[in-house]
Length: 109
Image 1 (cartoon, rainbow, N blue to C red):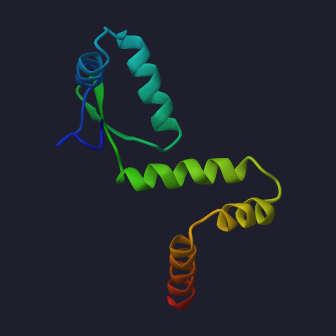
Image 2 (cartoon, rainbow, N blue to C red):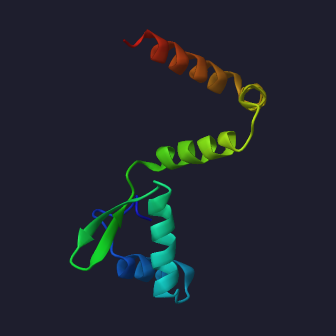
C-alpha cells in the first residue's frame, strides 16, 4: 500500500486505507506498532510531521522481496547450500539472468 501512495502516509491514512480494503476497522495502535516495527527493520522510512510520523516505502516492491530473501538466507548457516538449492529450482531463463547480473557486478569497478 505504501508503494501505491503518491506521498508519505500518516498512521491514520494507513489505517483508513487498510480498513477500506479489509472491510473492517483496524486499531490505530496496531497500525502504529506495525509501522514502527517495519521502520526498525528498514522496510519503510519515516519522517517527522508535527508530533507524528509519516511513512513511505523506500524502494519498489522488488526491493521488499529482496529484503525477504536476505532474511531467509541469513536464517541459515550454510548459505552455499541454500543458494545452490535456490538456483537449481530456477527456470533456465532465470538462472541465466542470475548469471548475467553476477557478471555485470563483477565487471563494475
